[in-house]
View (cartoon, rainbow, N blue to C red):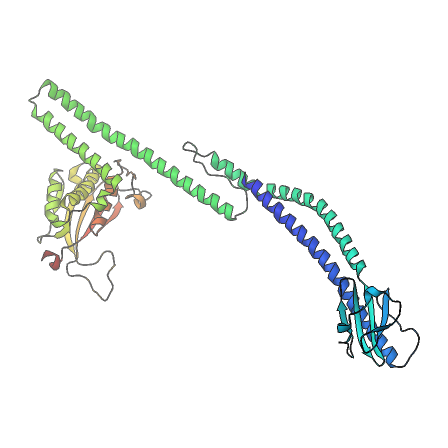
Amino acid sequence: MSFRVRLTLIFTIVWGMLVLLAALAAQVGVTRGLFTYVQNSLLHDTEQFAKFYSAGLTGTAPLEGTGNINVSFYDLAGNRFLPREGNPEQVIPKEVILTAGNSPRIYTSLRFIAAYQRVSFGIIALSQDIGYIYALSDQVARSVALSLLFLLPVGVLLIIVTSQLTLRPLQEASRAIQNRGPENLSDVKYLGPPDELGRIVDRVNSLLSAVREARERERAFLAEVSHELRTPLTSLTGYLERLSRNPAEQSALEGAKRTTEHLTRMVGDLLALARGEAERSVNAHIVSLGEVLKQVVQEYPGVSLRLPKEDLEVLGDPDRLMQLARNLISNAVRAAERPQGVRVMAWRENLDPFETLPPTQGTPPEGWAVFAVRDDGPGIDPEILPRLFQRFARGPQGGTGLGLAIARQIAMAHGGKIEVTSKPGDTRFTVYLPLLSDAEED
């Protein structure tokens, strides 16, 4: 059963109940209104009769209000004496008539309504048959029932038309969403008002947009990784062919070894990024930042290194920190297109670059160990700079889009941070790492 059918069925049931309640309310309202009118009329006429006879007048007392009123007289013992042959069905019980006072009172039975009041010579009572009230009420009920038989299908038809018009945007949006799939991630068009359904469609469109962007990033990433893997694999194939012809050729063996190591690092980066190992698997040791930088710089002959006289010790994972520095330096070499255009320097920073310490605590004496990787390449496009550390983001010099994302994860896992500034001829990646405190050394 569709949502439109369920909604129409619910509205139809509610409409039928409302019409039925309206019919019952009309019947009850007519009945109570007539009862009230008759009672008020009898009270008024009884009071007029009492005044008429109390004034010593004779004859027929004036009657106002309804017709078909029966006038009866009772003695003080509660026995009716006039009329002697009156309607026996409109006799007020003795225990009721004896309660008469100087003001009129109402007595209601299943057949008649009576008003009675004490006068000088006894008790006067005016009564009226109420059968016509029930008959009129039944007639009203029948009329309302006939109206119900006519209004119910008309109301159902109106409900169907209204629900069809109201739910048309929902049906169109539902069909559009059903047609969406892996090959169709376009936005869902919605022509309805900005209500709850409009907000749902906007949310669906936001999710579709995020999926489209993710797929585009994945395509770009796969294309770039394929390109990056193709080059070392081609080189490795060439080295292996040379070794097959001359197994003793040392240069081919060394080249194959370097290419294999490069491929191993690349696959390791992919796995680390996929599993989040760069954030979680930190095996902390007391590490000399200078020694880490020396080992990494040796892998890139021509890159200059400047270290401070004092040793900068941090608490971290040496393998992860080497991976961080290696990613930054390799990117810088690729941007400068030569290792001689890259400089690495380290120093001690006594200020809090994150501004996270409350003023009452002051600046820690240990400060921060900072190292920067600078290159004289063409710089980074300002449009790329804000998303440079995102996964799968590619810089102007290519790359897999993984190195900087992993570098940021490693820095954050060590309680640090990476900042980047760039202009043509001077691009700088600055890494802040917390220095080892005296308490941690002990």
